[in-house]
Amino acid sequence: MPEQQNYRAPRGVADILPDDQTLWTAVKSTAIYTARQFGYQQIDTPVFEHTSLFRRGVGDETDIVQKEMYSFEDLGGDSLTLRPEGTAPVCRSYIEHGMHNLPQPVRLFYIAPMFRYDRPQAGRFRQHHQFGCEAIGDPSPNIDAEIIEIGLRYITALGLSDVTVRINSIGDPATRTSYADDLRNHYAKYANDLPKVDRDRLNRAPLRLLDSKEPATRKLSADAPKSLDYLSDNARNHWEALLTLLDGMKIAYPNFNYHIDHTLVRGLDYYNRTVFEFEPSTEGSQTSLFGGGRYDPLIGILGGNDTPGVGFGSGIERIILEIQRQESLEIDVPPLNAVMVHVGDNATNRASSLAAELRNQGISVLMAPAGKSMRAQMRYANRANANYAIILGNREIEQGVAAVKPLQFEGDQNLVTLDAQSIAKSIAE
RNA sequence: GUGGGCGUAGUGUAGCGGUUAACACGUCAGGUUGUGGCCCUGAAGAUCGAGGGUUCGACUCCCUCCGUCCACCCCA
View 1 (cartoon, rainbow, N blue to C red):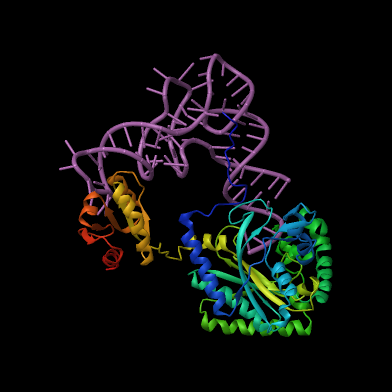
View 2 (cartoon, rainbow, N blue to C red):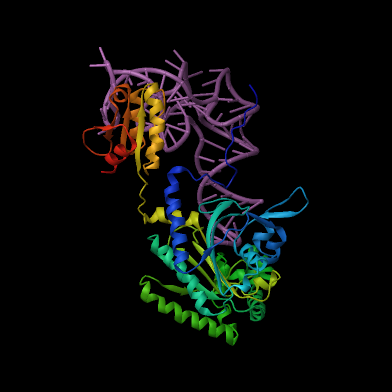
């Protein structure tokens, strides 16, 4: 006996099994449909990119780059990284393919796997899938509102309710720096009271203290300076225009409500101005369904001409968990028209060619396992949830007929002339 | 990286310091003469996560490791 390893999927990654596929397909179809309703076009970028794309784009100091990337060296010595997020690759593609020559803004969407080395837990995986939309080349608040509206329409189409939109503006890079300084000073006054985790973050990422879960820090956050008070005139106008547009959304989306959240900052360096998240009012922690915002600096950082952008990513696994929790979506399993039951060599041979002809007629046909008893094949047919069994035995072959038996409703089986058209017709009725 | 819960057939569970580890669902085969669903019978399928220890004896007690789930960090 050789050493035998029992293989299982690596930690944090999962098979999407047949039973789950109908729901997955429904969610992905809804995503595609919704994005197209807004004129977004699909793009697929490679699963891996040069590591430096993410170091530059996402930011060297971010957690993603610091500790969550699946990076490897290929045989040619290049450092590559499995995509941890979708925005930087899409922007890379925008630059590489000269999309600034297309009518602006360029509206793109993707449905793609993302990879992050992280401890798995509920709603968090090392491979997960995101539906994301990016609008590149338009600085107006209208496009921010559009991005948020896509998210709204998507979750509405999926039947999800009780989803809260949190929104904030973190200003532009210049004001953000002075804001960060003031924030640092605010907390520094009480540095001794801060828990260790937050003291460590004080210098590195002061904005992150705002959404700390440490009670001591939260207390201090109550009267911490707010990013909205630091906006430049332009950023303020942008922000107020966006809020007006969002208020207007309440007509078309009566359940829509947003909350301005001063503690909402985001962990990726490229964001400026608008940031937002969608989250359900569920217990639990890893529940954020969407995350997004404006990333005007990014294209420039990646070597393109200064070009504004805004977008979101949403986790499909989390959306599915939420759909299941809310039981918000009825899924119809696509029906199978017929199972071919065939006993005896003559019948078995004829069954294959008949099934092929039936498929030409648009009938889906599942072959029952050859060489098994009729009872076994009928049981198989039953479990397959097919609408009809098409039964071929020696008797039928001799008479030039097929027995067509309904499986999903009461009714007698009929003998039908043994040709594809007649059988297809009897099944279509 | 840190903390907690859990690890018994494909799945969900039961079990007890002591001879063949149980049940349900599922799978496979049957219930006579070629026909599913319900019912009945039978079969296959578990080194009781791994290693070590305590004991006359451990699936059952202890330790270590691994895995998994949940939480922190962070994010989708």
